[in-house]
Image 1 (cartoon, rainbow, N blue to C red):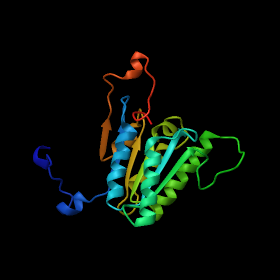
Image 2 (image 1 turned 30 degrees about the vertical axis):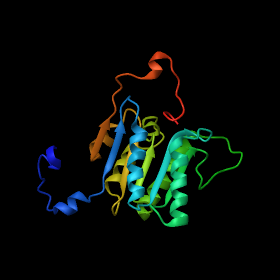
Image 3 (image 1 turned 90 degrees about the horizontal axis):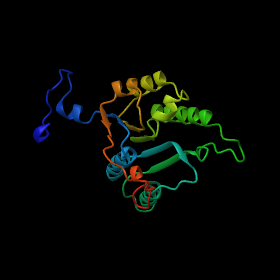
Length: 204
């Protein structure tokens, strides 16, 4: 896309402005590092535009405090106290989902994933957020916890101007087919190959 010009202009009846502002479905997949990091980078841009942001993490443990979570909580507080940026909600399946946390309940990951997807569907219908990050969302789909056909239909028919970015390895071909942007992160070399574990400031 040299000089920012598209390779072709579709005959879809839309103006350049309408096409430019069309809400996107995006997928970050592949075996390389950086899928979630890139999604949170997009969310940072969305926050700067003042958009309401919803982050839903489908695999992360409640005990794992990642750097992006703490940073976005701080940005959310900045919005609440000074009106800068947009509002942010951060939900993590490993904590039992903050809207329905059940004290002392035994974790049923499949049921929790399905519950998270139902809530996301409700929010998409209500146009609650302008930008959604569905982090590690490919895994519960691949494990059969969330129905891929339901995901495809919901995303394809979502109302308004809601951008959705999903991350995780081995994205279902049906998911890639409806996406406007698909990026595959390829691993060339990784410190773990040499026995080095994750470290502060890089992995969290």
